[in-house]
Length: 309
Length: 265
Image (cartoon, rainbow over all chains, first blue to last red; front, side, top):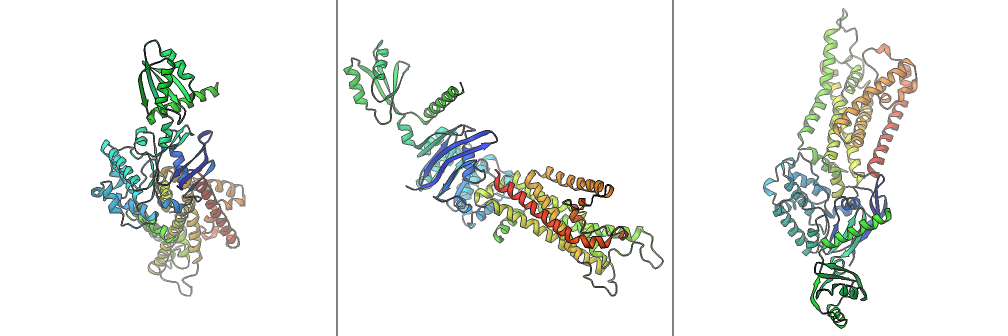
């Protein structure tokens, strides 16, 4: 599969602050690619750089395998940070300007207005719109001309629960149509629900990037339970098992984390039995992106603290 | 470029502030000259033959110089128009959106420079109409002189307008806020006059004539008391003033391009 966007070692300094540090990843065609990170992690900075509103301090990026140019941006529907429109013009007139800049005709405007349910208010000035309506107009503007690639930065910002659900459905619909979507969010469940790929950023550092299933797969772990008093023995036993990454007690049970792709629950059960422990409880768990995210950022914080010391 | 201008037109054609400011810019040119004309006509003693002691500054050929000079007093008005339109883009962050939607940074800055040029042309055209109005309607065309004698002042006005308007545009690109940019424009206009006044007129440092605004100001000398001007020296220095104006215009564009093409938006 070819890559729509390729980012190589992009670094960005704001004065002495390093907002992005050597970030590299590829966005495959047809993927819904989530860029995940807490506020201030560099998501918007990264998207700003690939849309040429910010200048990278180092590194390169390419769209559609070519060096960046304004012609490529015309083919991408982008919602970056906040909706930016002329306050004194109506919603429709604003869309006309956006369509003209993208080099498209005006015939698509009624469709996108209907899509975000702004047809009735199309002649009202942008300044009279509510926050949610502004956001919806921005989404409409992205859809102009039915682009094959979309970039959304916090698309559900300012929307009410219905608007959030509708926007997510829109994104899923776009994904079903085979469009490539780059979605930045600090809302983990948003990313988890719609994304096929994910990159996790923290303080400008790329912690992990790849297929959502791959990222989550090495998160598979097993919770085991055994008779009273045997927990310590079980822990010791598991620690010696090849492929085990981490063993830790959790309530009455023991959680065992494996290296990627080596876990076999049947094998595990037999191993314990043969070594004199009968399991009373065995549960395969898949971690949510949220716990993965917390773990990654915690590890990062610890190692950061260690370096500081 | 025509397509870019069409999009810029879409931005302003339904913007009431734009039309109000433009109307003020257009009306103020004949308005101010008419005020000065009236004052001169009514307030100064006339000689026995009915002629003003100041001559006929609003008849051909002097009307070219007088109206052009009067109109340079009004540069703040088109400057406000330019600053408002430019800083709106920063206030609404539409400069970012235009780039995101598919303009290059060069296109954004290029079309705005063309607009500054067009506004200078328009304002020069209004001055032309005003000159013709005074020359033909308010006064009789004196016998034996060509109507176009002195029309080079119209070109000097254009150069001066282009220079001032580009400064206004540069300030709004650098400062990004309308109030501050208008303030900076006014302060610079006054400050330069004061500095030139002190160093040129008191300490006789002639190089002060080549300050950014002074160099274009000198193209159109004060029209009403001709004895103040050393005409020979002025004629001799005109090419230097024009060259100075061109150099400054180049510098303004360079500074703007450096800041807008290289920095974060």
